[in-house]
Length: 265
Image (tube, rainbow, N blue to C red; front, top):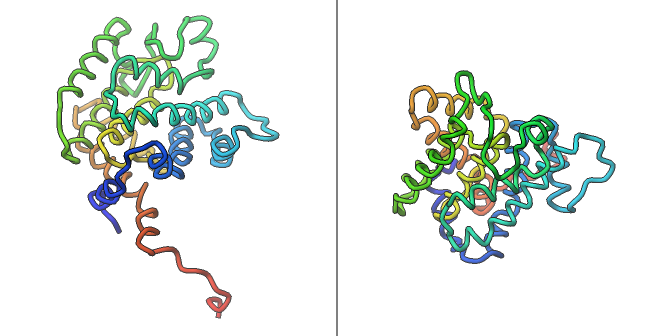
């Protein structure tokens, strides 16, 4: 079993310095990330529908909720939008944060948020929303300042150390979740931003698997209640190993044993 340091070494050995190389490295990842990041909060999302949209740009004979289609398509559009920015290692700014949210949340706001509250994707919330057992996120009037403080804090840390970068990605993700800057889509935004930080620092991105969401939410809650980041840092490392283990096994020729009829004897 490969640990996260071996996976980081594998990723960095690929020398990903162009969009085609990055697209190749993320070929299967983007579909799995979009599916898992979406289904954590929207159980109507399926892997089949996600793959259809990523590969064909449409789904035939779809009869489900339109919001589900928007969420999948939006994740695809966002992934494409970020490719050149990752290669250029563009810093995370408030403008970019809002743009990513606008892409991810396009067409997904419900009637209360959009028509009654006048809220829009890519714009900070105008009302408070329950974000956890004892949390409502940052006060509406404090959101812009808290986002500014977070981004300035992250930008001030200059490092090539993988451990520190994982810590920064986990910290940024958790603080964004705590602030809950937007009326909806904060989870998808936080998971996308965490990967943006990893990728722009030449580290492999992670999938937070739907099957692991119980542990994921526990890590978020531990940070909210105790300001303890250690659980999320370890969880990120675990998911990094889980995300790339099979890829690395195949690279080393450790593919699954081919089934033969004689195996039944």
